[in-house]
Image (cartoon, rainbow, N blue to C red; front, side):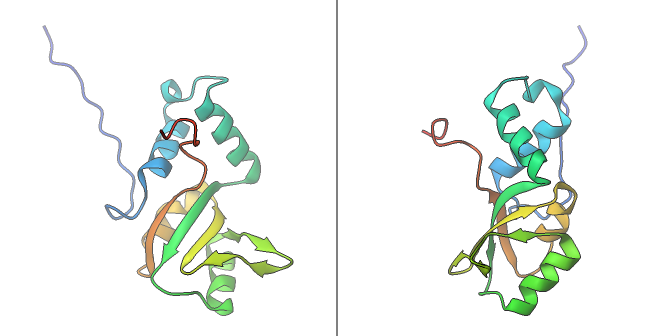
Length: 127
């Protein structure tokens, strides 16, 4: 009997800088068996795809300046959550939409501590 095949999925970002929820959603975008039509994963991914990227929380190692925010928006296409035009943050944690293809590049920035999804797992499944 042949040995079972083990497929290893990897993501080109430093270990520990992309959270497990976001890694799961990234993998589910590539692996159809993880994204069954009508499932919670499919619902979350469909919503994010309509928004043009992953809903994420990014923890930086410092509070960002307006210039740094502008640079991240231009260079990586990040869309920071704003209210009345002002970026909303809690200390060094920012809510953003990150284009899927930019997640690894953002995670590799030296001043990014961690990036993870703010939408997965949904609270009902996180218990």
